[in-house]
Length: 226
Length: 152
Image (cartoon, rainbow over all chains, first blue to last red):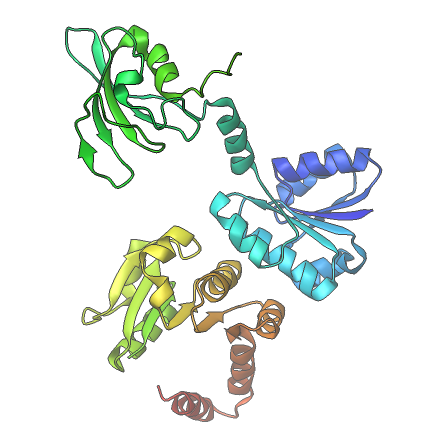
């Protein structure tokens, strides 16, 4: 394939290197003469100095016969325009844009950039996978007693959904002190108060009991045994 | 009275802001550099906002959804056309106009449905006409005529 890479920074350079190794025909378009010289030293004569958003530059680069254009500069507006010029004027079949501000993904998709890649979104997705989705938020420590106040949102699949508080086995020295329903109304619970999915629960607990409390309020019901 | 957002408070953006504001439009002018507002005279009675016009959150915050007109006139062609497309395609602003210095890019985005204007070709032509004038007086008369055409 003939692939044009707009932007010869770290991302563009590494991409081009990989693509050359995979036997693709590659051209990097880069505005900075110094960077162009460095790339030429490393990868050979595969660089063109110029603005990859300009139709005249893209024409000289032979964009009309390119199978793909990858716009990977550090500026989203440049990447967008480069892809749009490639599509509109040169009918490039596939345009790929690097997105620096994840909020721009929606815009690029609406404006017919074929593929968008956002490092921020990719890293965020990994982080979210690693983090427990249901967690308990410590709000404050009570001085001296070793107790702390924590907040928990009751998940949809929790074992306590639909249960009155008196049925819940709480860890030692733990107490549910406030329940805020989805309507936003706070109530001081009694043993008869029924918990619902989505309720915000403020509880007092020992620091060491945090995990047991989380388990008691947030984990799904145990599998039934017959 | 229209509600107008102008992105870019350079000489052009500021002059347009004054013009529209004097003729009764409600103008909000946006620039990433607070020092840029020096181009506005003291009696400008529109709103000045420091912020980036290609940031969705900034645009939402200034109420882009209820605006009638969006103009992008920064120094960056790419920023101008990106902002214009956001205003038009994401927020549905009815009238969107941009200045684009690169003639080829200007033509392309005009064909894609944006209202764009390219100052470079017009100015190059006018500069050629005044150097071709037979005397300074004739050249100055030509410039006066350009101004009359634009009601300046």
